[in-house]
Image 1 (tube, rainbow, N blue to C red):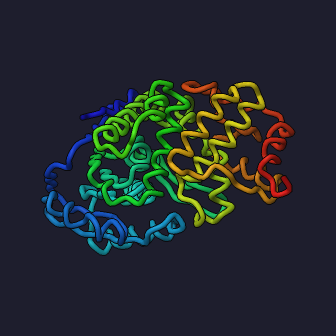
Image 2 (cartoon, helix red, strand yellow):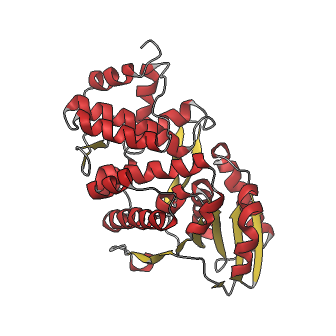
Length: 350
């Protein structure tokens, strides 16, 4: 299956997302594969057997969200200079969302920009992170606050890489599927409710549906000035959870699952979502053993972290909230007292 990305404002940025067994890839110039030790041990030999290039280098960086930093990007850049890469060289992001984000960001920086492609190996990266050109790193102030919109030349999604994925990593990817279903597609939500994603054919269908939704949104709004912001449902809260726990306690998708629960609670309080729909989403998260609770130790501090979110502007926080299941709303005029009331429900004194 091929899903096209067609950015109406930049024809040169059009590219395809190929969902299939990885085919042979031939490149005329130097190639660097950026990966981590875990993926390298499991899948690098397979990838190398599929690639022909003038010269192939492998850059291995530490595994984990805590290494998604400017220092790691500097390390990758240093390797590229040592290898004497030029503007016609290519980077391959081979791993999960962390690898994809940092490789894309590095590609945007090296000699003011070189090409890269995505070959995602986690479910989260396949259904979400590899699609749409968001790149970047974290810092002490928050997640992905340093970065760029920089589109890959292609995305190759091979579901067979998921055969070695741990259960927690798989569930983290499902959280991103649920995010897209709740905000954009009620039929997809119902599909996820009744389907068994351990079935390879059903999983491939779910991946394709998620990618199609993401591609449609990116095609309309590459730089997240409007509808694309809705893909951050669960993230406004989840990013704070990740920051508070130093990116070590939860996988990204797990933090998103917690953020979805918090966003739904706010949506119910404001009358955007019915209790029965909130319960359905909670039950779907539980189906994949995703975390749905979190103890906020300092409600005021948690609230202040929202202002470091990229969607906030003019001292106002834009929340992405569900309108039932299959639609969304993005209000930026919610009273602080209302948000504090919801956060208090997750507070340590409750």
